[in-house]
Length: 327
Image (cartoon, rainbow, N blue to C red; front, side, top):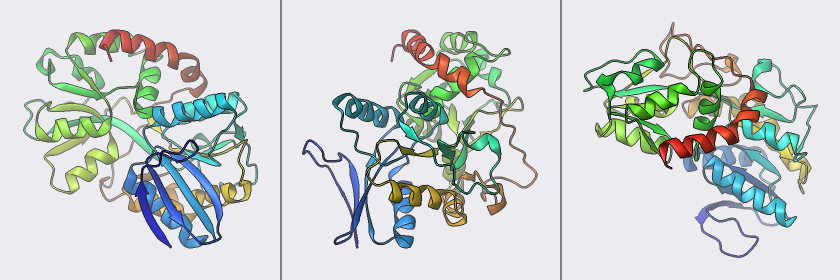
């Protein structure tokens, strides 16, 4: 068994693919937006339990994964059996299009109902919240979302673009529909010269280096960087944080339905949830533990965001964001 990274150019090949080869093995195709290291460990963990299943992975940002998938739908040749991406919003859209297969037999013991689709078309693997990160050398110590509108932060804040990041797109529509924030919040951020960059990784680099001392960022990136000595702190604003669940789902066009179900089973199992914990995330099944970066006594207040409202708003919101921020 070997693990290789490579870029394939044949029409049906998987660009930027991770391929685990097993002689004579059955093939399972996964599309995911997980970071490369996480994707490799996730597949390796699954492979350890199911060595006779060959796994091919296309990995990129959520928007890129969905664009590739949309092109394949249009051509009538969707490739993935299973999908593991950042947010339930995209899964809800695919569900509405009839692109997902329900898995009513999935074992959801210990999972809160809010972490999975009530009709069991997709299932959250972890909680990835978005809060405020700041460089330890920064003058201000933000505690609330509206602090970023303050003139003291002008030109010093960076955020991931919702045109690339699924978590940022979820935040955009969740906030714009919120009675206390609304679309005017983003207008205020723009007026305060907040910069929108391609993804969370770019935000982390900017804050850690002090280029932009404040950033809207996903929790695990900030906390894991801090644990490695990066001069960064992370705040869960008192009024709450949006949380995406990195759900997994089986495609209705899956060629390897059995393998896809086994993969979902692994993600939801104690082994899969403990891997999420080891990777530095808040697992969706809380009973397996909490990451080392989350101090004892700290309660994460997750904002209530209606997924159907987000689905209705997201394309319009992203278009408006693109017009406002120019990216």
